[in-house]
Length: 304
Image 1 (cartoon, one colour):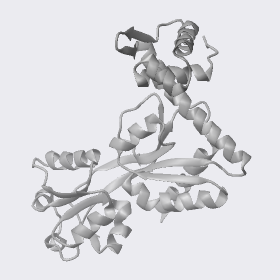
Image 2 (tube, rainbow, N blue to C red):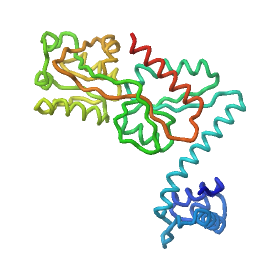
Image 3 (cartoon, helix red, strand yellow):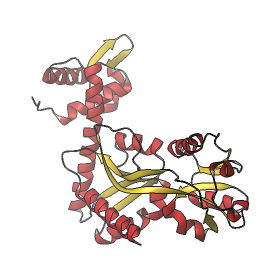
Image 4 (cartoon, rainbow, N blue to C red):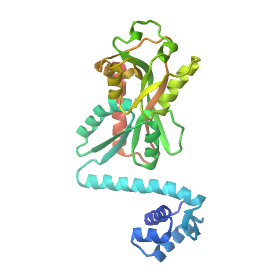
């Protein structure tokens, strides 16, 4: 059963929950307290459930209210997104897209793809936010991002669509002249003897690293430094006998930075990667354009 609900009622309900009491929420909304109370009652009557528990210190959402709060925030985000697109279209622009990118995607694919879609969609605004899964996925769910480009190693969620575009294999890099560069058939015990530089807050990458060493029956190496960019990691590795890990697709970037990939015995870890976006009744046109362009760029690079 569907309920015809005024969008303003949802906005007022969200304000009541976020402020924690009717008085503060009514002041923020610039309406009277009785008017806000009436709106919430109207919303409860429309849905046939109690949305707020009222007590001496204010209001808190019921289990039904928590569902409406979560879904209602997404409605607010989609409404704002639609308003922005409509206004942009009226002004002759193509709107905006907010892209969350892992360091690999931000380095290899996103700059070229973004430049292409900006060129072919006059007036389009592209916001690129770099991050790791621990930050990108929550931002996507909150509606702060339209799409994320990263590893897809996070739990399935009913509100998120995943599309795998590539399977990344890892490589290990050192500076030229590192003691391991003269060694053939490098094994895990050789790698453990040196300190590592890793990306900060990338807990999934750290988990892959630990799993690799534990599967070989040894403890993981010491992480000497964490940084937010591959450029800094590569620069640090070049300055000492450190090691770092990145996808094999980063070989060219690493070589430009003066590093070389080591020849490791056995198979290193690999992981699925691609795009993820919120499940909606209709995907914005510019998001489809971006994803199609990204698919083309990845397929071109894989063939090289």
